[in-house]
Figure 1 (cartoon, rainbow, N blue to C red):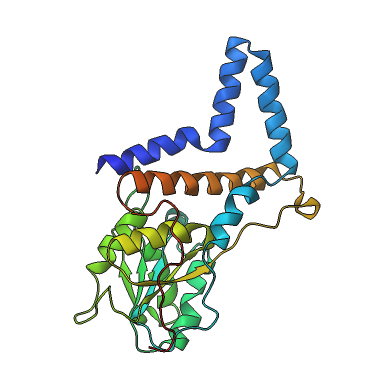
Figure 2: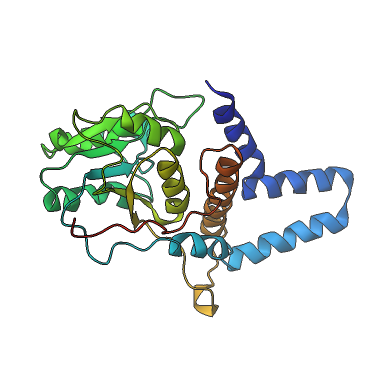
Length: 269
């Protein structure tokens, strides 16, 4: 198990906004730091009513737009896992999905649109403690129930986005190239698309962003809501993604800090 993977998990336990605020609050209470305790309480009150995650998610989700017109001819489709609840699926013996289910839902219409191209679902386990539960297995089970699993290539060993890009090359059918000039549709959550594009490009993939699964709302009075749990969850997503962009750039897993649409791809090739 590589050091980057372990350190990234440990680091996130600490910097996850909810965990970080609680740790700070406990420390402040133990030390009797009243000013810090009051500041944390005000911060939690603010997050309870204002979805601060919007401020972080909006630029991520706006970075890449879905193709105005889907290409007529592509090399294939690659879908990043992460929408599957592998352990829950095993416990309850039926496929379970989370809030990112749009990633997997996109497979069905793309199957119909592109009947003769390879479709890859890449997703193993991101868990240090329970690596036996793998996302690709969940989707394979779901598609088996619809007799469509034969249309998808399942890559089940990757643990993060960097490994998605690497291991997916190893499951390509003979004669299929990851750097094909026609491009691969890359399907993932909109907030995750900048980091994913940067990583896949750095590994030589020619990708066409196909973002799904949006979270953010425009900033304003209409976005206010009294929901600490949801607001903290979205804030965590935003913080994690920005931290991930920086970490992957600093470790040379991508050569752009905030990748953009710089590749010109013809929709009619």
